[in-house]
Length: 118
Length: 105
Image 1: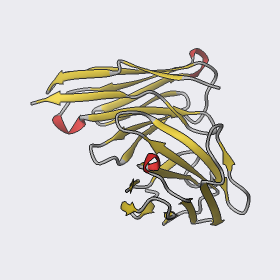
Image 2: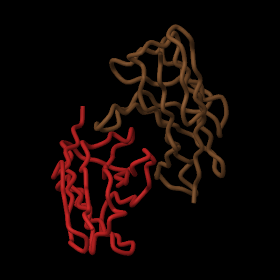
Image 3: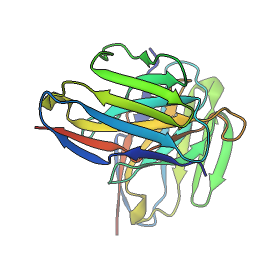
């Protein structure tokens, strides 16, 4: 089946610094990737949708200058949390969707990244 | 925007019991999927089911797109079924509120 890898799985950073999270589709080309945020005991909240080679589409209320998303290739999307603050601490998870020919419209998730800002 | 409600929010079962989880959409939906989130946060694909019925072992799912709901059936539940079950749909994969399942040995 389709495999999506996310790295790092856990990261601790100091307040005011930036941290980058990578999301890779290992065995298929991901034309679209989604980034979600999940607070404890809550559902996943869609942050943004990224299409390869174009700017990400952010959901209402998500600061695009704080959460920079880049989808430079068909197998890699990155989320950079800039000038991180403790309130940015959360579980971030990406998903990827292929071109429909192989995986259809099914999305596959990475393992997620736990971010702690101290 | 579209709302996705799941019921029940919490469910406790004895091992071996059967259960039905429901997912209601406020508007028409496509690309409907069911996921199981394990205690480590990993989301496991269960079904991609925009319409109709599918079965995979002890799990099956039915989506009635015209009535904007989907059901996930778990039969002969096991402790490893514990976790949170989410449905998600629409082209942006909006997630439902989730059902937290605990199966007791």
